[in-house]
Image 1 (cartoon, rainbow, N blue to C red):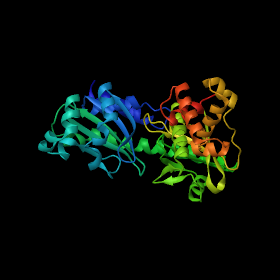
Image 2 (cartoon, rainbow, N blue to C red; image 1 turned 90 degrees about the horizontal axis):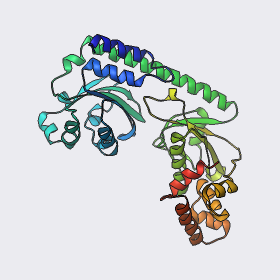
Image 3 (cartoon, rainbow, N blue to C red; image 1 turned 90 degrees about the vertical axis):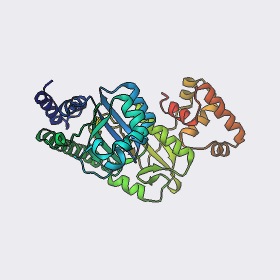
Image 4 (cartoon, rainbow, N blue to C red; image 1 turned 180 degrees about the vertical axis):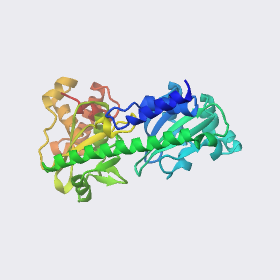
Length: 360
């Protein structure tokens, strides 16, 4: 494919970045071909080196798996690009000496092994909670500065920046409308990653997190002093990201009683690339229906007593708290938790909560 055709393909994909379902793959392929690389990736990181999204063209499944499981934490492009404005291009050939690269495990054990001796990265997002970059990999080590400074690349970079700005404006408008709608009913919403980092919170949610409540933010991450409640919250966020079903949580709220949250997979127009975000609704002063005991018993083949323990875990209670509330020994409750794990084929309490959240 000629670079003129590739340029038109990239610019056409960029023109649709504010669509509900943008052609991210076409964008990656177009930029890869314009730059003249062998593969391309779009990577989003949360809170430093935690991988939020990895989208690729012409990258092997093995390389993607290795990066996600191990090498992301050692990516040599992450430290030198911190704080760089969107639209900035970086070249590993310029950033690092050949001596450094030959001794670096990430370069020698990962990049070279997967035919990516050089990476050309364009910063596309540099926010306080997440960072994103579009990277073209080449199996060469020649200087690319003249290419990166060319009119062709500058044109693509400028168009990409404008396209992402348009998308961000659309996302903010969508969230603003949703926030106004929920505020009219005395409710609040926030947008979070599956790992619990809050990317945006409505005025009501900001007020909620700023008051003396058990559920609050620590470093922009959702946090609860109860380990059991934190576990239930983590399970709910993960389940909401993986399933189209609405997840309802009721967790201890300290002086405010209990906090009632509804979690759902966010609309795709709020995301970048293939990342999955969670939209949360805070239901002030509403009662939360507990999981149906009959449903839990019939779905998982457990006893009524075990169903009560499972519902307590979903509600954020610890085995000790449930034992005290029921007037039974904590050893009895722990034995019931062990039985639940065996019957529900789970190895951790968080897995019990995840399965229970989707019970009909």
